[in-house]
Image (cartoon, rainbow, N blue to C red; front, side, top):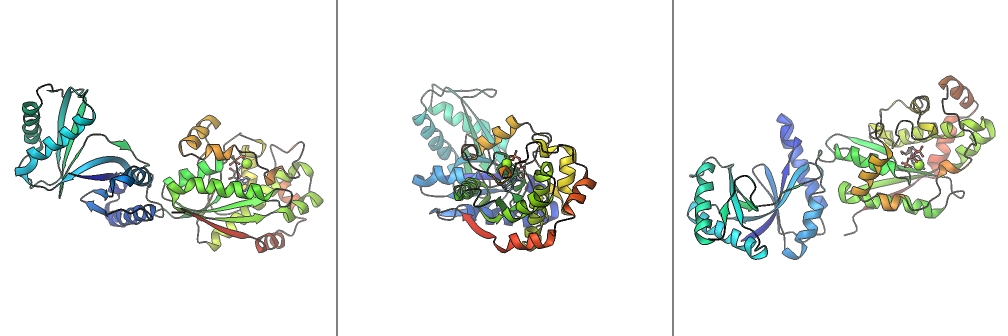
Length: 392
Ligand code: ATP
Ligand code: MG
């Protein structure tokens, strides 16, 4: 009896002619996610992926593997050699082990699936056959086809797999299959969630974080890196570009209306992100904005920020309530880090009464006194790049 971890992919299976590309990428991502673990074998058996590893690390490997985007269902299974003669003994061994762990089980049901159509017994024959074997051996059990205490799935592939529990895995598409994007990652609750959601759709992320050092602290930069670290179990690795925008904020403060400070700096943030995107062959930007959440996230505010760039800007949280965003942040384990205190560059020179419904023409007019390109060049000059990846 050999334990394995089993993973099924979802949408990837729908990709028709591109399926091989998606499946290969999924295997590559899985192997990368499990680097550092002493797994024995990672392999495919028809449409499922399997991992064999020493039992001491199986729980940890399982939790990591099911976070790889592209897998929809995960389970702990037992694998046997495919030999019809041995099937009854295999079922007995499997069920006995489960009963030993949980003696309260009273009812059961078999659900066989024959992926290998050449296998001599049909699913409909296997179920009653194995049911009979179990009933004979364990007289206190009975079959319950509707609501069994124990549902034993028998999956016939190149080998035979028995499993009883299955769980939802991360879902989505393998990272790297839908392109690369620059995530504007602040230290708050929203942007890590936004990044996570796009990564789930197969996007490879590059992050940019803005600071106003020395007005913001080094500790705040660290916090953002900690947040990026929290995203790693799902995304594998990420480069965080740190850009000090203080020179830009100073120029805006000196030359533009105070109430436009936030919108004008946000336009610069977008431009910097777009520059990084072009340099990194990324095709879009991602922000954690949600309509109406704060003064700069009104429709006019979003229009004004958007207009500074020509790349598509994805805002996966646009229609979500804060409570819904927090739920995801808790589930993906970024929340606790996000709510730690930090000083954000948006707080520097924060206007008392920010414009909430800026007119693009007015904003562009205010901005026209600035040498945009020179300012961008200046802040890009001092950019730092930190690569975050698993430390195992
Ligand atoms: P978050 O919780 O993600 O910080 P927020 O509700 O605080 O979002 P804003 O501060 O208006 O909203 O920022 C909106 C979006 O702009 C953020 O979700 C993020 O994508 C980007 N952003 C804001 N500040 C920064 C920063 N210092 N560095 C990088 N991106 C930022
Ligand atoms: Mg913020």
